Image 1: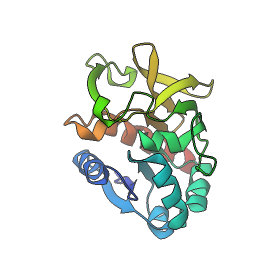
Image 2: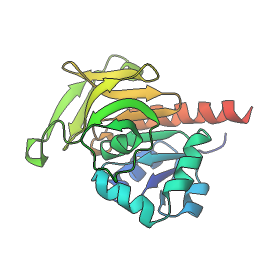
Image 3: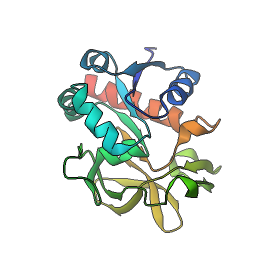
Length: 201
């Protein structure tokens, strides 16, 4: 069986934690900072961080257009927190110069769950994981205010969607890499492998 090569966008955020989780699931995980490194991976994690800074660094490192091209070609992604903001169709309170990759059919509001001091954890049921809930870590998390018809809600907290699936993509408001539970990384790898097999057929 071919080992999936997964990159973690390493411009800012919890890069090391994602690498550890992916490697623990058996993936070949590496950092992505250049177009050549992006070209060498099968799938990509867009981690948390600060979305406007990450947006600017995509341009500084000449990654915006290569990333858009890979996404258009069907590269699977796992986006968490700020990564979800980058992948969203609409950022309701974004800056005019902020990059929106417009892959996930959701509208989000940055820091919708409050500032750093208001960070919290909660047990969240995730449909892709079965009965046992996932301990979700919310740190300056974006709020999903609208989910379009192309995205599927796979987890909610209260009345709000906090995780969506859309084709080969998973988008999370929270930080799965901040726990010892790698189930969401494993699900992402399984879905990514299936999507890549379909594309190759």
